Image (cartoon, rainbow, N blue to C red; front, side):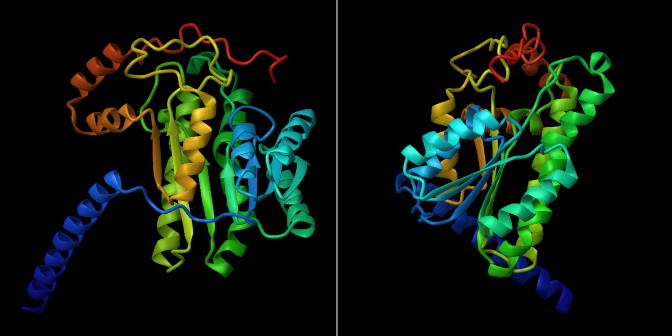
Amino acid sequence: YRLIMNFFLESIQVLFLSLWYNIESFIHLLVPRKKKNIAGEVVLITGAGSGIGRLMAQEFAAHGTVLVLWDINQEGIKETARLAKNGGASRVHCFVCDCSNKNEVYRVADQVKREVGDVSILVNNAGIVTGKKFMDAPDSLIEKTMEVNTMAHFWTYKAFLPAMIANNHGHLVSIASSAGLIGVNGLADYCASKFAAVGFAESVGLELLATGKDGIKTTIVCPYFINTGMFDGCHTKWPRLLPILNAEKVAKKIIHAVLTDQVYLLLPKSMYFITALKNILPMKQGILLGQYLGAFNLMDTFRGRSKKQE
């Protein structure tokens, strides 16, 4: 009898809360969510030497944050630091770090804690792409893809999460990809690494909630191709539906998602619909939709960044 009563009461609670959460979401479509103040927060961005990493640094700088910039390219982070200082950052610290090397991540993390203090906003942005069919990709490049795009997230969390947990305050930002939600022909290793990054960020976010650490927020960003040079040569079949994204606009949307504690940010908005369809359509229909959207030929003209751009 008690079991039946518990089931009934919990079911009623879930129904009422579900209704309320839906009403709340609808209200926020009309009334913007309140933005939190991040002035003085210590923001660490990996892969800050170029592309989205650099643009996010400039956006965070405008909010009066303390910036910690990591990249393998020293000249790149020096230029980002200059732009961030001009953009209003209260302090900027640069560290050369190869995120594919666990020991180096831990060593540089210790240096950050000594010289700057505890990181309160961690942005795992560093990423690489081979752009080769699975059987053509050398083992070393596949391993490097997983080390940078996935394993680095494990090591940065291990390094900086303890202080966030102690303070029940922080924000974990994972710059993943729409290729972490839907498989893409010609991106097997990249998709695997981004699926893993999404799953990892989701799982740790749930772990923190389950242990009562609700002051630590998670934002998972899954954009389509961005015009940073990383996917140079790739063309989109239907640019109105799935446009190549403007990097500056993406950076602004990411910072807005952080300021409003948005958990998932999919770009463009059509990705929410496409992802939902993938999960409910029969397999053959899903493949048909993928062919229609050009997912089978996205990588046919891939060039990627030139050495000069890097």
